[in-house]
Length: 261
Image 1 (tube, rainbow, N blue to C red):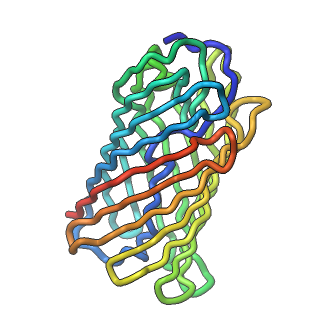
Image 2 (spheres, rainbow, N blue to C red):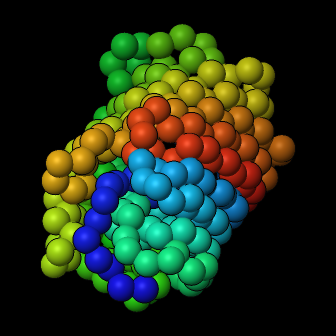
C-alpha cells in the first residue's frame, strides 16, 4: 500500500492507548517482579472518513518492576482492513482500496519511575519516557518506519478507601514522513479506578491527543474497564471504548489475561 495524501486522523487501534489498567496501588501487592499479558482487541468505525476501517490488535506485554521502577515492552501483531495507515499513536486515511493486510506492529518500550507514595490529596508522581521501535511494515500501512518518542508524567491519588483517581499527560515527538504533514502531539488520559470488592475494579478513562496532522481535529475517546484479580498470580481485564469525536474509532473492545511472577 502506498501512503498518499491524507484526509483525516484517528485514534490508533493499539492496546497501549486503550489499556485501562487501574493504578498499581489499586491492584494491591502481587508476588514477583515480572508480568506478562496478552489482550486481543478490536477497533472499528469510519474514523472521520468515508471508509470503514477495522483493526485487530494482538499485543504481548512484558513488564518488570522493582522499587518504583517499571520497564514495559509491548509487542503487537496487527490485522487491518480499510483505507487507513497507522502513524504512531494515530491512524491516518490513505488512498487505495484498503486490501486486508497483517503483520507485526511497532514495538513500544516504556520506562516509568515512582518518586513517592500517594498520601491523601498528595499524589504519587511517576515521570515516564517511551520510544517506538519502527518494526512494522510501511508498505502495508502498519507503521511509518520512523521512530517516535514520548515523555510525560503520571499522577495517582488514593483519596479514600477504594477510590483511585489518576491522570497522565505527555508530549509525543512524531517521526516525519514526506507528504503526510505529521506533527507532534500532546497526549492526555484522566481517569478513576474504583474497587468494587477486594479483587474487582472498575475504571473509567477519557483519553486522546491533539491532532497528529495539520488542520485536523483532536481525537478523544472514553473507555470503561473491568479488572478481576483471580488469585495472587492471575488477572483478567475486559474493556469497551467509544469515540467522542468524529476522528475517533466508533467502537473498541478487548479482553486480556495477565500473569505475575
